[in-house]
Image (cartoon, rainbow, N blue to C red; front, side, top):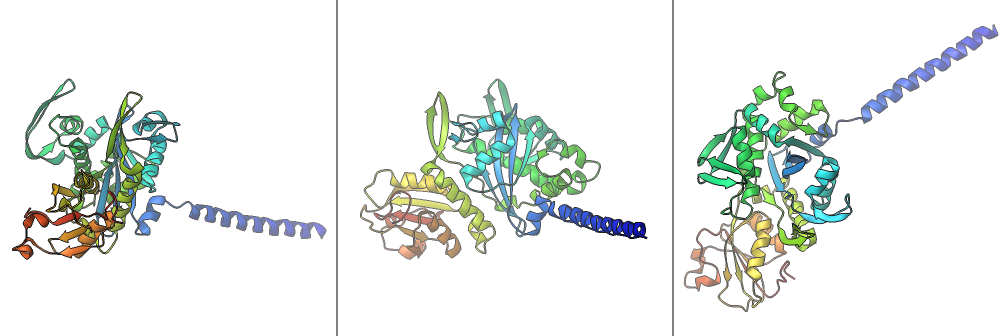
Length: 400
């Protein structure tokens, strides 16, 4: 009789243990959520570091921030020569030295540090694999304003002008050649255009490239920190980026030589870059996202006696992705207050531009509004969207 009771007690304990084991397994499984799916389900910004590398050194590094709700995106170029104190290496050096010595994860961490944001995901491809990807999607479509016939290193580069489709080998040339005639930032812009063209081509050929037959080949050319089953979802999301409304941006700063290397140190000890990223990302999901519909043309007039103030301010606005088409002195050097003149009547955009320097003095006007006035007071460029006249209350960064 005691044996039967004992057997029943053991059986009861086994049942309890089994229930606890199953419950625990279910809880553990439910906690292992896919971070990509979690990000998408929360309708939040999808932030991805995209790196194209050659022989363990980044050729291009971009943060892509994408808002699925509107297909709007922002793109930030991180130059390899960006200089800072690298925590992972314990020295001042180029940021791409981290990639070479410590790999993509530490590299991503350093980039998160200088931009002030978390970038959960990354995609990397070698230059050769990016060429393979290009051929896999049928070539990349880019616009080349003038024919290219130059020698870069030991290679002669020949590229046609116009809207052209480049194969893998030509894309490598397009992304890597340098030209002494390039305007500042043009080399980085080519790499940005190539990456965006790739994602656009993914979308154009989605039924083919995301098929069970082709996608494994495509996936093998890309490394990522998302599970293999989620890589397709990640690429599918990025392929929906509305590149027509995207204004690529880049790190700007001053060049200095450190230990025989020329390094690019971001302006204002890196705080400007953080401000640019924060303001840009804040605009993606906001109701005033129209402030980023296109590149707006600015003219900046120096209304003070401070030499070079307008030029330095133009560099500031170019860092935020604006096109500064005129920089000169105002009609007088006695402006007490800084003023932003909105020529196109777009309140959302004018506030966004004014926010860069914390200017609250915004006036809406057009060239016709100043008939009879001295045009130099308000700029003379008919193609200007906004005019900024810097006053004595501007300290070079903010209106005080």
